[in-house]
Image (cartoon, rainbow, N blue to C red; front, side, top):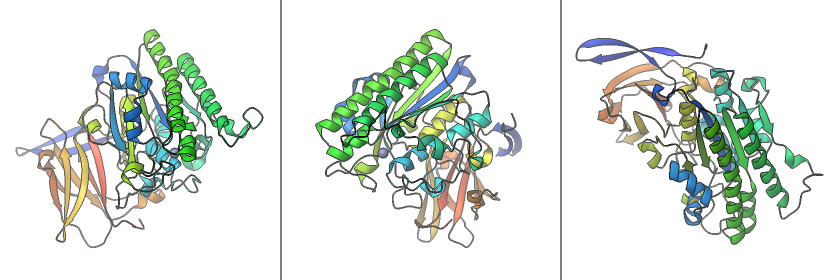
Length: 425
Ligand SMILES: [Zn+2]
């Protein structure tokens, strides 16, 4: 496939120059055998991490037992250039694109001007392998039409093979009522259809979105009504989980399920969200993935789900798109996490956590432009090469206040910006 990108990577070691041909994809290892990988992600709206810990809903607990549960975050880098509103569509798009709002540009639920240059999972799946089947089951139609941008030229003219959404516009079947029972009924229909299609068709990549929990949070705050809505959503997730189990018993398939939420809630009452308080940023991730790496327990971000799904499905991400991804997979082997820029006495220091068990090399690149944002190319200049175990590097930057830093390791790209909070780039 034309998007299978290979690159020449120069590694200097013990005086020899070794030319290694490394794939920059997030391809999963051969050792998974001949099973066909499949992935489902479910977003249940607006449930802070502490609430899931307290309620411990039975289906989520059962899935966690096969894989794991972790507290996680949304909101990007607090008080940094990537700070991201804790608002629904903003969170969904961070999952879909593996980037924070400074890149994907969806600032609220109006979805006024998404930047489709940061490709979403559905576009990557189809470009990587047009034979892959995708599915969206959603209580909100904009997820498909605006965020994925199905059929839009500027979003890559992606098509979704199985879709079940838009029921919120059908006021005959689902008459709107102030108690939001119609949303509860739509979630029920959406989860029924997700279970039915997953069981009968086994799409390669599916997105299930359930809304009612957030409605009850807004209406009643932290309350029995909100908790009841979560237990109801747990049952709906159970239908999808049963469908996956059924597929695995009948077919030679390796299913990944990831369940998360798009934001937490305010600590005072639980009625609101959108800001940067700890509890609004506090989310959670449940997955059945057995081969989680140490990053899963390092407070992963919603952007990491993007990278995890790419890894599991073995999707090939075009290199220029991959360089911009803010996520890191929490399954499979990785080299670095927690890449940061620290400014100290006029010095700019790059730091990271070494996650590799081998003594790999980190190549460090810098560019002063952000042409990618407008569909152009950035020329990266290589500024250094250090062992991953060094975990820091002094950056000698040329003038200017904006720089994109990229580090390339044997298995990964990681990027960070040297930029002020309200950077224009
Ligand atoms: Zn929400």
